[in-house]
Image 1 (cartoon, one colour):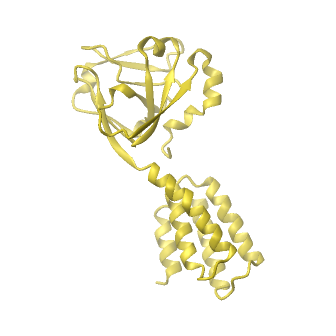
Image 2 (cartoon, rainbow, N blue to C red):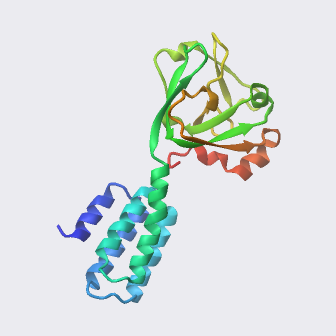
Image 3 (cartoon, rainbow, N blue to C red):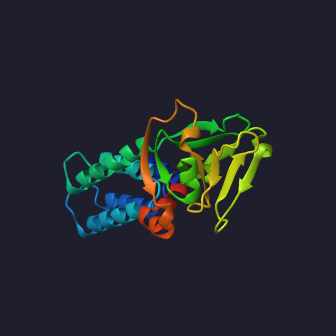
Length: 233
């Protein structure tokens, strides 16, 4: 197996269909013009589709790794292709480093409700001023529901409060009354964990953003908060 075949096999495990299509185009172009460093029509088309795939591909790690591998496979001279691959790999690898997931644990005051979430060490937390959040001083970290897990027998100590549209499911402990997490209206496919309920030691940096819950619809549109519960985040 040569380097191009090895590169393609490795990317099959990580790339989206659009990205793999462009990987194939790249390898095809390298094979038919192996000895040429000129930017031909074929090679230009290859780079165009490669850039298009990057805009569709959710797996930034795969994009970065592919860029580095193609950089290695595209020859020893400094061509336009090699410079593009190198430029693409740098922000993708940096993004991958920032998005490494760690396990954060937390829960309520009496510790009868305990949970864990998978999220980066550096996170975004949302400070909301809606009628409910403002009363309890809520600042929340939103994660996809698949990255949230209730531990032990926590569920038996939970009760739920809803109001307004009844989309948000406010979960609080029956014993101590603390809302350590809930299902937010903005992200019904996710879970919002209360920032101050996360156990110390795993959060390296928290960026606080504002969500104007008093003007919910406008803030929902302007902040892009819905993306916080998607698995690619």
